[in-house]
Image (cartoon, rainbow, N blue to C red):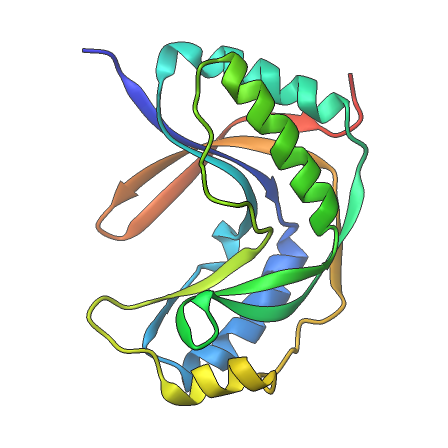
Length: 195
């Protein structure tokens, strides 16, 4: 039986930015214990989630990601507004959106999708929405009405506005799931703008 690796491609977040977002998330976590909050050190901007892929094509995948990275230049990301999936009135997943850099991430995502098709990897069909996941609603728990109201009215604190960093590389990660969550391990790094 062929061996597979759970894989995704993402732009990593610098440690200082992870810490700043972590401080902000801890404030919200006290107000909304109904959610499982992402560990700051695991935060990243996902470009493509591939799921389980055959380990025999990982080398080809990393080479394609490097080709795409070479055709893009580094760009600034500014994190700010808070949103929710599937919508603010039903906040199952809380995320930070981008006030700047979202279009550049979308172009990377699009080019990666084309490269993935060349490897016979079918990209995700859902529309790409650049974001950083903050928290997920715990199983069997209803979202707080007060949070839904604050999201819809735009009155939730935005302590992370103007948290910014330069997106300079893409990383191909393996992801291993266990009872304590997921463990992400870089398999390759590709610097933007470097052939």
